[in-house]
Image (cartoon, rainbow, N blue to C red; front, side):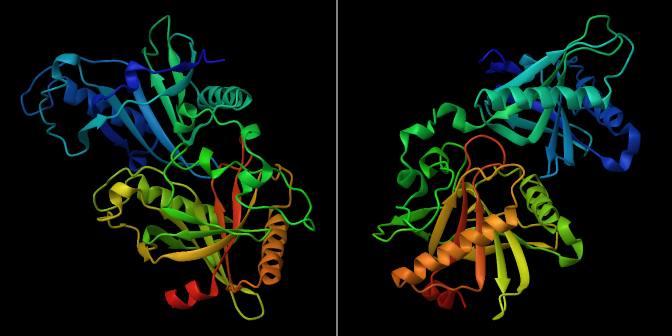
Length: 393
């Protein structure tokens, strides 16, 4: 079932001329972006060199949790003779980018001469590709969709492709059967708790799917929870806006995703890490007061993280923190997710109280390691130790 996997030349390491697709340009934004690239390749550079055009034309679009676009860019590969030495662009809206080798999954299709491929065709092909990958147990970065056009719409025979970038998990052959329930969860389950879906083990996520925070697993003889020290580090954070209503989680995610997608003072594209953390703070009556969302910054950005340009986003430096967690697997597309989280926090609190552990009950933390509804799942309900909370205050 690997027929649609390819280590492709179009995404091999090399230099590309790139530009952002600007929403301010309205319905002609893609046409205007393409014109900027063509202008550079046909002489709009410091040497006035006509380098000629290449194919395919690549468009990358970031998506939020609701599959809504949050920004696009367009790129063309520099011809081979200009890969090592290339003239600088004269326009401010284009730049040379050096891309690393990646693996992509793709679907190819043609279309009618003289017609532009409609949006519903692109959507259909992405859905078909995603379903094929999921059915095959392959994981991919769903939050970035890529299109590649090898031919102009005026040509009789055309080729277009939709692509997803393969997760690094593809190089790690994860098999849930290799782990017992206790090994996957990270602790022995208590007899009084009902059996839950086995979560994906962290060994198959951290360093395989993406980078995770630096942690230390603490030996624990009690049942019903794991113990983990999260080492000090920098996180990018945003407070959820209550006025956003049910959209507050999505909007918070979009703000953080926009930061790592380039909405920072260096315009750096920062690799996504896992898990996505949310913190919900409560008063003494256990009524929610406010919530926040957080991404861990990759190791290469820990010492000097780019500054957010959105005033609702900030960099936070966290201290070493002792945490207690319960892990759950796939909770199903039709499940009452809020009810599941409430139950897990209730069970976690009971297990900690029975074990005589001191924890802070007025901050509930959730950690999402995997995309809900796709492949093996891991989600965690977390309380911090009472001592850790007092130190942070």
